[in-house]
Length: 348
Image 1: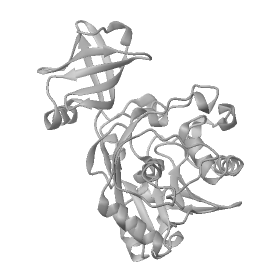
Image 2: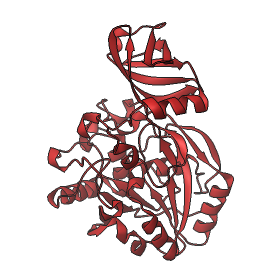
Image 3: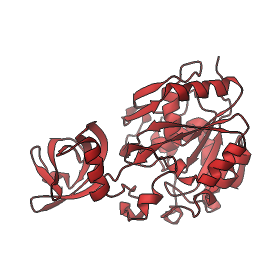
Image 4: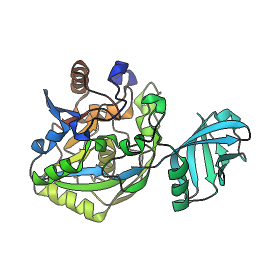
């Protein structure tokens, strides 16, 4: 498909710089067929049904942005995909100053060697430690990897809490599963009282998730790969809920992509522990998810293509136009929409 079909103009003033306070005070645009309804995220329990299963991503964002030096030259790196316990693929600025064999020093006693250099500023780094020791060093010396459209990516101490969801439990993401940023303990309790069952899956979100597509045709785009896990217990609970007539409500495109990666043709969700590079565009037949809660996404992005596939391209263009006219806040710290699949899949 022509990527230009997924383009739109967004006023810069509508890009949220901070999340709503409290988080569940964010606005929620419900899109059901051709009907648009304005709510707040705190109203979500009333939009759910008893027996629904609500699936969130429990990945935890790591402070993946590091400032270091190669000799006298300043170098900034943003980790984006693990290679081994002590090695990561990263984006470096300025990458032209780096070559394999170089050492980047981030702090006294904390450094990494450049082991490979790729295109578009990508490098492979081997740190002087791995596993939990590397995570501890990142917590001490790293910064949260905010997207570049939020304060030019310059995170502060407040972002260490703001850019983390209430579900965050498993460290490994370098970008937040942003739909989950809206949830609070009070909202979770209200969902439980409404009769919805809450489950979590894990997809470690990579930096490529929110990037615009640079190819002219979707067929020429190379989708990033991310690691995901769905436990046997979670898969069984999802299948039981759907067999009993409940809907699967995915909180965020990351949860949806993982569920669809693990779903068989008949809609059954299988346990999963692998990488996925699923790229969903209009024409895709959804198998696992009935309802999607997600933020408002970048033009020409794989995520806007996904929501266009889920609810229809023209419908999403109308929904986004309504959101802009109504002053909704966009992107990672912005408001959300709740999308209903017109012909939800069923097991069997």
